[in-house]
Length: 498
Ligand SMILES: Cc1cc2nc3c(=O)[nH]c(=O)nc-3n(C[C@H](O)[C@H](O)[C@H](O)COP(=O)(O)OP(=O)(O)OC[C@H]3O[C@@H](n4cnc5c(N)ncnc54)[C@H](O)[C@@H]3O)c2cc1C
Image (cartoon, rainbow, N blue to C red; front, side, top):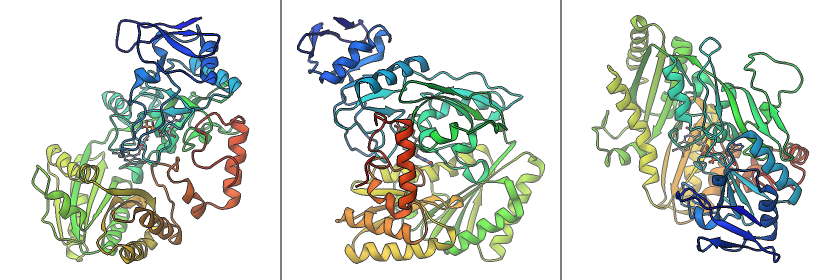
């Protein structure tokens, strides 16, 4: 039985023949396609005629593309890669996978750092990479409908062209997708002002494991007609269903964007400045990023552009305002910063005076990612800490790590306005460092993931911050939505306790 054909393009498929032995072999052209498992062969047989030619890619043709994590970890060889183009095709795939028991891992842009999209043995990949359409924004309603595989940046650009703004921005904007953003409840730089991804979602279209399609794309600001099912998929890391489209909230585009880069003597000073800016500027304050010593000093050494402030301060902060009154916004911001300097809260500050300088200060913030991604041997986590406990957390966690490895390097930065820290360690004992950080987080009443989710890599720590009752409720939800455990199995938690 013939069900896949190679086109002449590199994107194309291999002709596979289904033999009685239930093994798939290449018919033509001759290429090294390995045998498929009977399960996958059965699935492909049932999918015959339902998907277009480019929708099915063999593991050999896929090469390393779907297996590599951004942090260098490698997933298993996929059984097959499925690349649907419509929610109907996703539905067919899920229904048939559910019938034959084929497990799937859902992939967007594969930027997540918790291993949630990493392929496990026996899994086929469901990639949303061909579902990238976005509709023209509805200017009056200030909404946009985007397919799950659309990169975040295309949503931002479409909003911008319509004179609007999409409220979420992250460093991985060019690669991370709408579906992945929903599934991880992405936050980013401006959570202070616009909230997490959850706050942007007015409704979703999602496909359940049995193939049923739930569509809630009316864009209603208020709809209390029964459960808001869309909310369940946000932050569920692909364990409850496949998001295929999202109706997203847009915001007025700011007329003013100004940022300031400040050197401060301590975390206490940074928290005092945050409170002052909030009190005096209210919703004008849109971002508040922090960078602790010695990260700033280390990263500016390799920076091409000149550093905005000299090295040597314990804490650096990037504060941003977005406003609608160009005549007043800058003055208000400058007045509060001046007061903070006079009160001894800020030691040194530069304020952007042009869009070029504004972008240059943000580039310093993004330099932290570049520096850390290019530094070998670092382990890194994204955690959430209540502001009131942050100083204790930093002090005690550093002491715990240094007690095990005195020479460990520790680099910390993050979204201070949201209590979200990136904690990176270079140490001879990574396992002890993970344990030290996560136990410190739990002791501070924080969360072991502020951004990337739990995935495979953090599930052994989930119990530190979620009660048995909470995890049991999550398991019941998973079992109700995906009783055969075909979607992202083993992510966040294992279905059976222990
Ligand atoms: C440089 C960098 C900076 C970042 N900065 C921030 C930040 O500031 N704030 C923040 O919150 N996060 C941040 N992140 C994390 C980022 O939010 C996530 O990596 C991203 O949202 C995941 O999108 P993705 O398309 O790459 O998904 P993937 O990595 O492919 O998948 C992530 C999870 O989503 C699931 N998934 C993907 N698509 C779907 C779908 N259509 N339906 C159901 N499940 C799906 C996957 O199965 C997996 O569980 C950053 C990441 C990087 C690499």
